Length: 156
Image 1 (cartoon, one colour):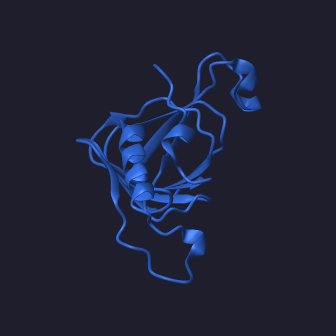
Image 2 (cartoon, rainbow, N blue to C red):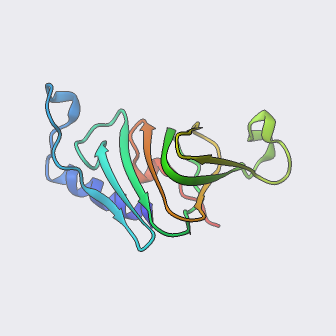
């Protein structure tokens, strides 16, 4: 899954001693790595733990080429998602209804839908499942930086 691919890329970058962004002066970052590639999507991390060792935030460019659904996660990071083309759907619903946002207290998860030109705000600690009915391109900004252990991928 996505978490495993990013985890491997992150560990290899850390092992190889890539510079931490906080120690760099102004610069052009190295060519970003593609940290996940499946038949349905590719994730390129422009900045973050896997690309340049930045722990405070990560910026990823994601291209979805076919309908797909990602694993459920309860992330320990906040995320902004800027939709560049297509549409993204996010099921929002914590297993414990008392932990859902006030406007999402009903029994089933709420569904957020965003299309080109819109931005999603996905605060940490909520239960999310991302899904795509077709092609989509977006930029995700995670704070702190994405790391597989912070994604808290859940069993279905």
